[in-house]
Amino acid sequence: MAPKPAERIEAALDKSKNFDSLRDKVKDALNSEQDKDKANRVKVKMSDSEATRTKCQSLLSKLEASCNDVTGGNLYWNDIESTFNEYSAGIDELDSTYRDCLDILGVKP
Image (tube, rainbow, N blue to C red; front, side, top):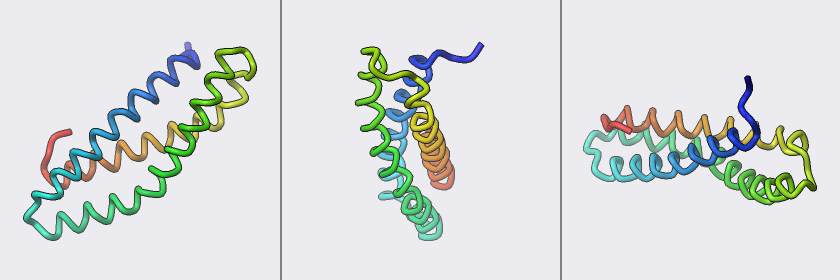
């Protein structure tokens, strides 16, 4: 049985909270990294992910407003599902990128 929309939203929001802490962890580890090659690889990955991060922030704002309409009965899940799927894919991409960066730096997530 597929998860209910509320469960999917909750899971995505939990992951988005997690990626902020992962991002901070990457930044902290990067500041203390002595190996220039590792640091440069991570900087490139972080820079490449910035557009996705910005897009996710924009989509999250839309979703937060839409979720109120869905729970209030003014919108249906189908009306926001494609936006949610795009947001969820972006969150997954960021999570993977930050975990890769931590791996490069030799830090556990």
